[in-house]
Length: 203
Image (cartoon, rainbow, N blue to C red; front, side, top):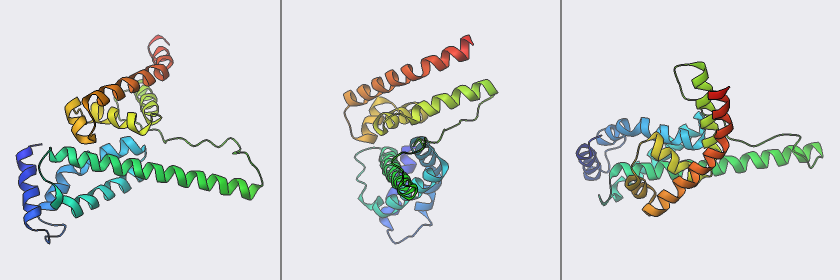
């Protein structure tokens, strides 16, 4: 994606704040919609929440594009909004699930959750073979169980192929924090996926 084109479109949006959803903002939307959805999907873990987070992201972009000051890459700013929208939605969704379970327990007169477990939906990536698909599914399930902070740096690094510097700009954290979070994510994934990899390759 050419930064020059992004800058030109942002400047056009800022020059015509009453332009609505058509024109230059529509072009920005078309350029970023797939990437934003992808990030939202990897962080929220399901298509419904990803769509909601994507819509929230572009709503914020539409309202605040005039505030962008070109002090960082526009794409980093977009990713930061998408990440925050996804994490916020994930928290709200978890809270709703917890309240729903508590209401169900009260209705049943039970203090137990009857084996019900709150967990992220699995994220399955399209792959060439069934065995590879199973492995990818296990990897994505493991990623979905990371904390929001660790999951976010993992998604930006390995799904969006951002450099450490770009992740630092996107999340507004230091390079040291980026490296630390990625190292912790690696350790967590190694612990969880080692048995899976052994089964897959040593069977």
